[in-house]
Length: 96
Image (cartoon, rainbow, N blue to C red):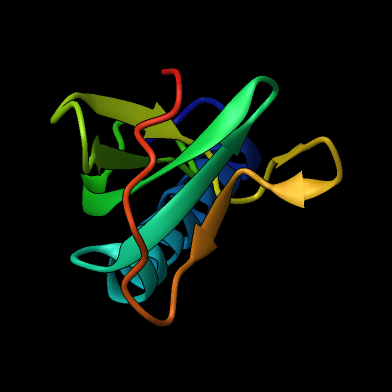
């Protein structure tokens, strides 16, 4: 029995919500082609997995093959950091 039952309950709710978010991000992004926008350019790649940090995905750059962690809910220069790409595009590599 916890000394802090209200905090214990909230922690369990948070863990359940984080699991739901992770499942939704996996369904939305894993295996999909994306364009990653950042402050000095963009690159295309494929999402390999949901990241270890909340609300992030791991994207493998089409040109360099490097994997980097990105946050789809963030924005860069007014554009989403991670955009789903509906049709294949020429990989531009960008700067990671």
